[in-house]
Image (cartoon, rainbow, N blue to C red):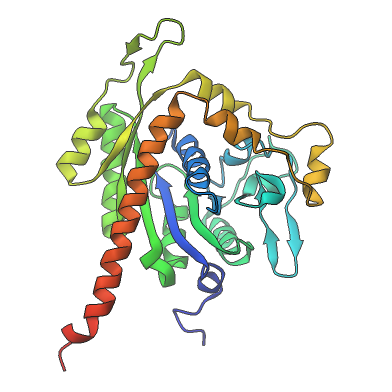
Length: 312
């Protein structure tokens, strides 16, 4: 019988240093765009950072579109599925999504819980991520089968998992975010902090800020619940245009990438870094990295002091 700490998932994720689950209690708060920005920003955080993004929003996979990877096939190797790399042969930003497995991107995914569970298990155990500094997991809204499956299958690597909660300032979204927080506490999932998305709208013409969905609710909730507040992000029309119609490949480039060809530069990242949101998100990532660093130090202290604290 396989030991709990030695499962196909634990063996596959053995070389992943940090796993970040991005979740929200409510749909439509921009969780997937936050996941995409988190992956891009972590990739840019270091000259050697290696990042993976796993899209387990099985019925609404949007990460391939946001990274400009629509239409790419998934290749099978002797060591498992090969991620689709947004940066070509640099292979520092890999992506896996059920969107790559659909014959047409318009096709719906009509699956019951057991099949969703099996798909998530296969993603976690069969994707050849290799050495990763960060694995970002984009989840569906709410707390459903997908979330429970993730926590269950990744139990052997629980110490390396943490969550980021995304909300908007609206009262309804904050209420659902509180339910999401309750889920993380019930499953002992550490929370790195809370992001308030769509916090105001900056007019691209005059720069005037309009609080379309109110503002400050996320920060107030974080303070009330004792969570780190990672930051606020306004509605950015440039970012919306970039992620909604991201097309990083040029005619004939898809085949070249499939054969291991490289793009002269990571165009999507370069364009993202020119948006008004990018510097704001860099501040959020700096806080996340600080939280991860602090958590790592606490684990080392517990490990070093554990032997002396155990009663004979």
